[in-house]
Image (tube, rainbow, N blue to C red):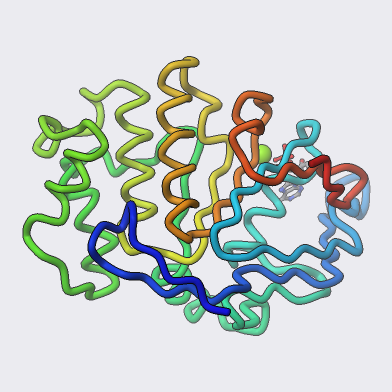
Length: 239
Ligand SMILES: Nc1ncnc2c1ncn2[C@@H]1O[C@H](COP(=O)(O)OP(=O)(O)O)[C@@H](O)[C@H]1O
Ligand SMILES: [Mg+2]
């Protein structure tokens, strides 16, 4: 059943399909000087609207590789990556880019805001790339709700790490994507700033977006509604 919610997306009702992620029998390997190394094998995963999932696992276990496959940044050697009912592993690179723009938001450890654009301009970018019809108050409203109302005209380099990451969360969420992929979103933040970002991710998930977060932090994982560990190329549910 589709899930219909408002909340962080305010008065706008967003209808998400119930099944957001379906990975089937994924295999991914890399070839380097020592030969071929299998990173993910026979990996399957199904996630629904509103799920907030943490993925932990040792460095090098393949968390970022898995997130890149989920976002269509990279392709599996075999298996299918279905997002909102669309098998993105069968799409061309340019179609995957378009699909990503409309359906998926990304959050990175080092924020990755565009340094030559102001905060408001960074937030306008995803809206304009998707030709979204938005009110002139939309960005102001998001900034107010995320305690950034004085920062709209600032450039990212004068913001604290926590503020930059809150802007990055808004940028990922502003188009109301079905899926947000966060790769170590609190890895470069102190405890307080990290807690604020996790709080925002919880609100985004409560509004129906599916959030998948790779993390090394037990505190971050404890904020998710489902916990998984990536080990030996496969995902195991820990809670
Ligand atoms: N493009 C690539 N080419 C070759 N090896 C890679 C590439 N990307 C990642 N790897 C290797 O795949 C393994 C998993 O990496 P990664 O997904 O970044 O792990 P994690 O995010 O869990 O730390 C690592 O051993 C890494 O060196
Ligand atoms: Mg990683």
